[in-house]
Image (spheres, rainbow, N blue to C red):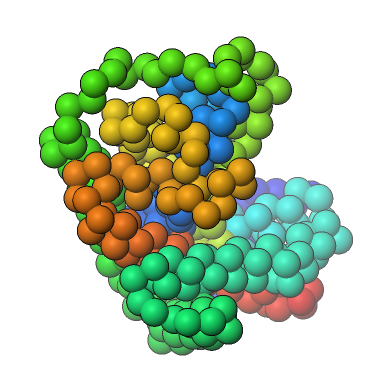
Length: 334
């Protein structure tokens, strides 16, 4: 194992520019984490757990686990401030073999899969307010999204970072607008904040709580992406830890507040019957919450929010994931 302070570990590729400041870096963290999970997962978690307290508890546990991971990566990002992220960490810790396997699956499976999922989701949500016709057209739109944002990120990392900051800002504004609208414009709920239990969820079970945590962790996925672009972050020893900790913590708080707002606007049964594996044709819980104060126009508002949120996460994934094969090629491991 090489020492953390070796010249090789700290060498920087000469053709990479450190153009990502604190705002850009934090936007990558926030924008890559917040995809569509926060708008959807309350339904499946409520189907597993009996009341608001347990659902929020699952979000808190998932948030703390994600924050712990962000703290670890903050330290690693400060020690190895170069492109590649987890590829570099595995190479320095366990050697080239394991690092190559990680980079291989990241290039062929993990990154393309997540990017395709975001694009397909954005295309599906777009079809809620733009007539796309047959599924073939939705597929073409998804491919167009991927091509467009890939081209945008070919100009420069600075441009990609600014684009990510813009998309993340719009996403945050829409989420805060949703929360504010629910609390200040929705009709006063005629029930206590903690709703009653349904017959199929009357008893708390640890196995169900663990499954709900996994669902919440899916919504927190993405905090590990920034270190992949660590070679292009300004003042990495300061900005990488700050961006990871602040960005993950910010999302943690937003997720908790948003879920409280859902339970404020809707009864438990309505949340449980929202879009999920059990009810694939139902409206998402966030859309139902928006309809409580926007009426039918809430469907359009949330559909736009879904599209922008998915595209923001996709852009962050495209920007950061490309640095892994670059780092592999630089070390003759691609």
